[in-house]
Image 1 (cartoon, rainbow, N blue to C red):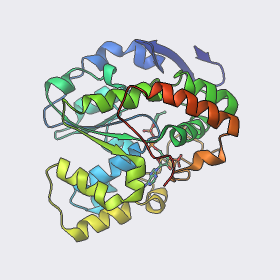
Image 2: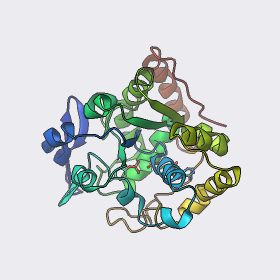
Image 3: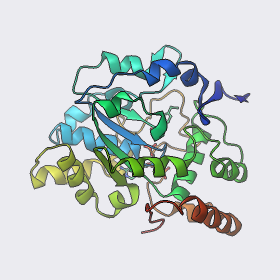
Length: 290
Ligand SMILES: Nc1ncnc2c1ncn2[C@@H]1O[C@H](COP(=O)(O)O)[C@@H](OP(=O)(O)O)[C@H]1O
Ligand SMILES: CCc1ccc(OS(=O)(=O)O)cc1
C-alpha cells in the first residue's frame, strides 16, 4: 500500500500493517537483544503510552521533575521498531546505557523473542476501543509519519478491519492480556488511570520495586496530569516535525468517553455487535465511560 499524499509506505509482517522501513528492517528488529534489566512499555498506539512513560520516568527518578525534563520523551525511551531516514529505534536502544526503558507498539506475536528469554519486566497499557479509535483517527490526521486516515466514516471501517498500523486493536489487547499469566507484565488501563491515578501510579511503583513517600507520589500525580503534560514541551511532542498540532494537538482531550462525540448511532450499534464477537474469547473487559 502506498499513501500518495504523505512520505510513507505501508507493508506487512505476518499480516500486521507496519511502515515499510520497519518491514525492510524486520530481521534487525526481530533479532534485537534485550537485557534482563530492560523495562519495556508496550501499548496499542494512542492508549496512553506517553502518560505511562512519564509516570515511569518520574518513578525511576524518585519524583525529580527537573531530571524528567532532561529530554523529550521519545529520546528518553527509544521507540524500538521505529525507522525513519537516519533514525532507528534499535540503534538508539543499542547505544543507550543500562538500565534502559524502551517503548513499543508491536503486537505480542511480533515482539523480539529476547524480551521473553531475558524475562524483562513489561508494562502494557490498554484503552477502550472506542476512545482509542477516535484518538488514533485524530493522530493520523495530524501526523504525516502515518497514513492519511481519510474521513471519519472511512477510518471507522479501516480500524474495524484492523488495517491500521500495528494491526487490529482486538488482537493487540487480547494477545498481551493472555501473556500476562506467564510473564512479568503489569497490565494497566487508561480508564483506571483516569479514575484513580495515585492507585495506578502506586501499582507501577511496586512493579518497579521502588518505595516512594506519599508526598513524592502526590508530586508524580500532579506532574503527570493532562494539564501539566500538555504544557510540558518534553511530553507534548510540540517540536516533532512530523506532527501538525494545529490540525489536532498531540495532547488532544485526555478524557474517557469522547467517542460519544464522534460515533454515529449506527456506528455505535455496528461496533457493539462486532465487539461482542471479537471479545467472546477473552476475560478482558473495559469501561468506555467513567
Ligand atoms: N497525562 C495524561 N492524562 C490523560 N490523558 C493523556 C495524558 N497524556 C496523554 N494523554 C492522552 O493519551 C492519548 C495519546 O496516547 P499515546 O501516548 O499512546 O499516543 C491522547 O488521547 P486523546 O487523543 O483522546 O486526547 C492524549 O491526550
Ligand atoms: C509517527 C511516529 C509515532 C510517534 C508516536 C506514536 O504513537 S504514540 O504516541 O506512542 O502512541 C506512533 C508513531
